[in-house]
Length: 126
Image (cartoon, rainbow, N blue to C red; front, side, top):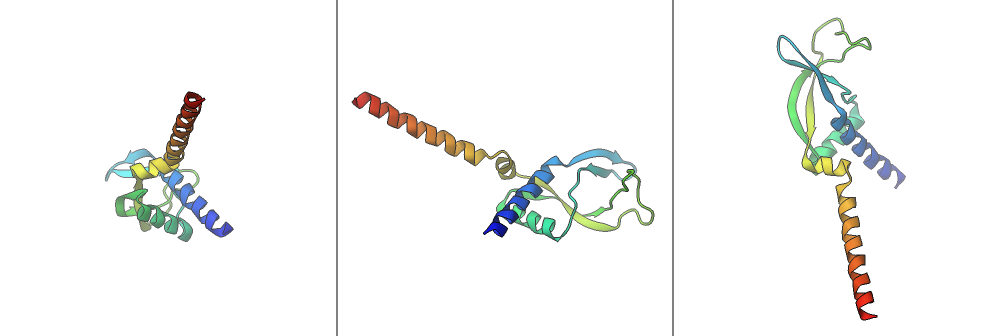
């Protein structure tokens, strides 16, 4: 059971990771996006991304985009400009709702409305 909670937490962390990404600059020629705070990909992150897509929380923005990683100094690594291809994702409205915990706030509002209605009947009857 604890493993299941941990996997759900990782899915939500990946979802927040998608939300934190931003384009630092558009390099020319070729309109190459340099993305800050990009997701560090591994098998667990890929599985979490697939889960987000399956649940409708994220969708592909670009599929099979040529990709490379910069050095810690922000320079292009020696060798070929692009070393692999990756899909890049964007959040859907459902994904933003999960991040902002919209369902919890809605349920809390319904609960408070129900309690207010009960309190009204109790006061009116007494």
